[in-house]
Length: 151
Length: 151
Image 1 (cartoon, helix red, strand yellow):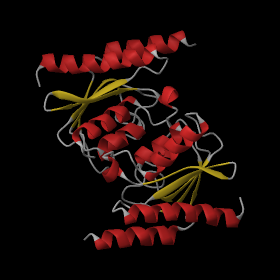
Image 2: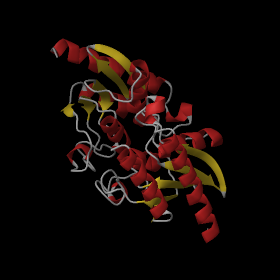
Image 3: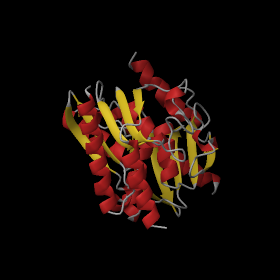
């Protein structure tokens, strides 16, 4: 992957996070990329959908699976603006995502480099390659501004 | 909760697991109970739905949230025939399920008493009461028969 492509995908996920913020949802966005093409996207919307599982990653994975007509995303990349929680990291494993790219770290809710460190568990059924940090500052600033406004 | 009620709810979850098996899906079933009434149910169907997140617990939680028009299942019980995986345990925490009842243990994929032991992590955002073992033999036998047939 070229740096230009990495920047492009990270920016697309960030744009989805901005859309979530505009709707009053925690600003996290995600896309799934297959052979260089975005085949699924999503942002947080548990409130609008009355669905606690409606995190950005889950929305993007479900959309991508629907697009490909499969329950496995072998060979796909997932780009997300925040370190996935345990639910989403579990879904990433079930979906067999090949590469996970996340922007900001999440010491409170993250389950990749924090908390249960799911992909380092001996029982994990699939482990993507993990790349962290591309676009972290923008993604973190968006989250910070969102929560500051609500305090 | 009376023993009769416990038996009844465990049996309802088991019946959903049987339905999954009949459809060729891994036999796990789940229900969500609110004030003594079943408000959501589901069984595994990732293949039929092309959705790797379509585990029994996720299906039941989404249905229950839709029924109540909320993304929080405060005060609700979730009954499931198998120890939840990390994805489902995470969803249970997000949904604020009050009490989790599961039948069979899952040393390979479970994330409650095995692997990441999600509800024992210091960063977990909500921790249900956990009751394990009611109906375990029937639930485990169903899973064993299902996988034996496919080998």
